Amino acid sequence: MFSRIVLLCFFFIAGSFYCFSQKKSDFKQPRILILLDGSSSMVNEWAGGKKRFAAAGDIVLRLMDSIYSVNDGVEFSLRVYGHQHGVGDSNCFDTRREVMFSKNNFTQMSLRLGSLEPLGVSPIAYSLRVAAENDFVDERDYAYSLILITDGGESCGGNICDVVKNLLDKKIEFKPYIVSLVDYAPLKDQYNCLGNYLTVSKPGEVAPAIHTIAEAYRKVLAVPIAKPKLLNASDIPSPSVQKISVPAIKVAIKEPETTQIVKQPEIKTVVVDDTVRGGIISGGQSKIKVDASFFTKEHISRINRKGLKSIIYDLAWDINKLPRRATPRFPLPPKETAPIEVAAQPTNKPAPKPATIKPAPVLKTEPKEASYTVKLEPAAETLLEIYFTDGKGKFYTTTPPVQLIDSKTGMDVKRFYRTVDASGNPDPQKVAPGNYNLVIGKSGNYKTKAITVQAANTNKINIVVTKGTLIFRYDDNPKRPVKEYLAQVRKTFQAGTSIVQKCTEEREYEPGNYHIEINTLPMMVRNIDLEFGWSYTIDIPEPGFLQFTNANAVGKVSLWSPLGDQFARFYGMEVTGNKQAQSLQLLPGIYEAHWKRNPSHPNEPEVIQKFRVKSNETTELELQ
Image (cartoon, rainbow, N blue to C red; front, side, top):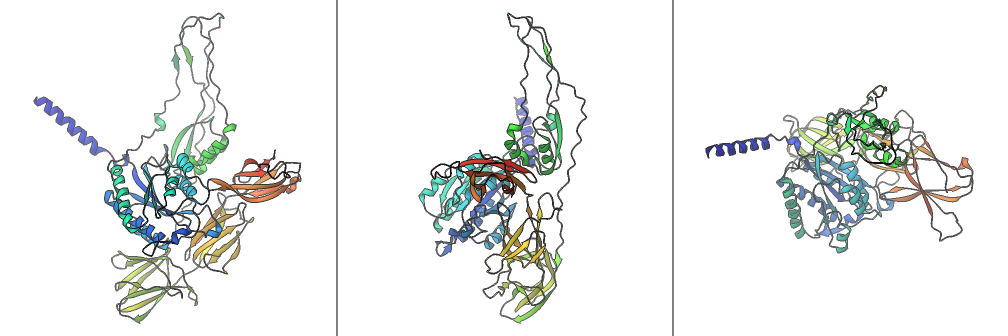
């Protein structure tokens, strides 16, 4: 009896030691993406005079606080759609990640929510697709979920359920939630495929909804989710001689005894960098053994330049070009059972050298120290007003984030956005008297030291700053001048600020938010926040060419490019049979050509032919 007790104690202690010995890195880190509606309808009143967008921001922060009480290690991220372009633009690519995944980013989330304004349309399906491809990138190391906060449905024709089925379901570890700010029953049907639908149309429904989500996540987050085991290259057995016993078969025709030699596919070692995420690779420079008969030289080159993930689409596109592997055929065996040896074919080819990886340049900038002057005006309390000027009489109305740091302790005292009133005067901030360093901008590229804030005064600080610079370059070929294109640059919400910039120029602009249109085909549209003293580079893919080879007159042809989950028309031309007039420069990508074989018949359906354009290559297309 005593020996049994000792044995049980031993197993209990051993089991406990095993549990405690599990490394934290053996489990997935939980991450939750907040997908927030920033479309124009979110400016409408929600309840009690509050705008829907402001109510959504409050819900986000309360959700974070509640989930932190369940697990304070959860990482949150914020993606917003419909907030960069007005309704008139009908921009169905309008989505941007505003806050990256990180722990304890409650303050960052609060500041960013306070700086955003709803503007445009609702590309929900496209935003989900971008989130699946760009935000949920490492399912092995992270357990992802999603919370969508909206007041409506898809407005760009995208199919939410298709995106969920084909992309999102494979990425999400625990159930998503949809929080609707309006009580409209038909919306629930649109989101059934995405997750659990909750209505929060008035203040009294906020707390129950947050409780529901927090409790559901409590059950998931209470038990750590183990990572799948990685398959190391060393675990893959090397080719060896196999002996296969084949039972005797009586046949009428006598076949000679034969030992069939089957050539094994050549295995190449490819070195890839840490841009590969998910799957079996993560972090650092890694070696993968791949079947050389499956990848072409172009694929191998692209792996080394951009990572394994970047060629997935290429493989799907070139699937008909891949070499087909022949099925080994064995001759009929003799009457007597005999082992057949299958041996690897020796090769005299030298082992390929690992490709050299050139890491992307890391931009390192030191904060610039700005000069300043201080003017004091007596006041009933201690206030701080920050003015930004070029030092020549010009004052800027830009509203960058400002960080107030105690000069002695280095402690972060206050963070706020420098806002201005209708006349351009800065809104005063209440602060405690003391000596402070100021860090200015999202990138912290400007700082001021030893500013003394005096009690019972309005401390007016004039900080001298420089403009921002806008640069254009070709992606993957920065030395090639961008001579082909022009950019129309317009400061958002300010009339008469439109400027045409050659893409070979580096041009200075006042800090602020800018809407940029580049006359590529299809047109590239960007929205950027340009900061003081900051150089912002817009990368443009190197174009390719489309050549219609038809010698006959086809007539009107329209070209279509992807827009969300569908295609949208962006250009029309005539195919007359004159090849010189049937060439066009396009950005790389997948396109559709639409035309009618008999244009005189209005009811005849259009013929659609897909094609692909690659950088610096000519795609020949014959409309059939």
